[in-house]
Length: 108
Length: 113
Image (cartoon, rainbow over all chains, first blue to last red; front, side, top):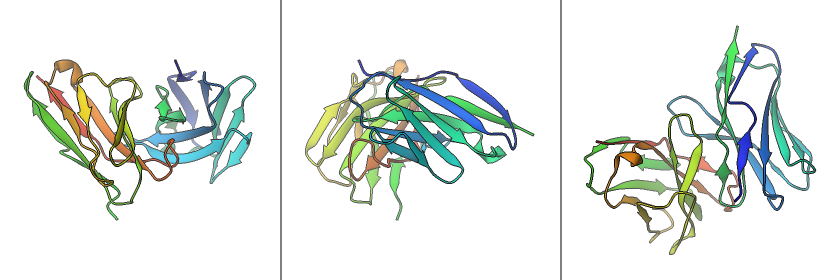
């Protein structure tokens, strides 16, 4: 069945560095991908999305890259801040299937 | 706007009891869904609805029922609670369906003893 998974369960970065969180998906028919951020004790919050006809989309300090050839997408966070510490999920259409998440830890 | 409101925030049930988790949104979103989140795991889709009167099963539907009589409300019913249903439950809604720009509620933490 369809699956969306993440390569690493935990990512530790130093404040100010760039972070890259990776995600793999199995359904080549997926046409829409989303990244969510979940802080401790809260529900997920939408960060950025990308359609399958794009290979890159930029937001404020975040960039999502999509490689359909290898069915991989990544979330890049520039100048990582302590407030970026959270679990990050990628999801795909249609029913919004999520991966297990990557915990981003930012240390000073 | 309140967004997506879930009640209750916390609940303890005994095995075999039934209850309904409430979810309401005031954004006129057509698409609503329920997820459960267990420690160390991601969000797993229980049921979803693409509009009033329409519901469908997600990844882990067993033991749960839903209905969608109005656009605003999407309650989740536990028919006979089991300890395996101890989890945090999130409701989400979206305007366009397919997960576009989902808004999540703050969650209901359910413990079944």
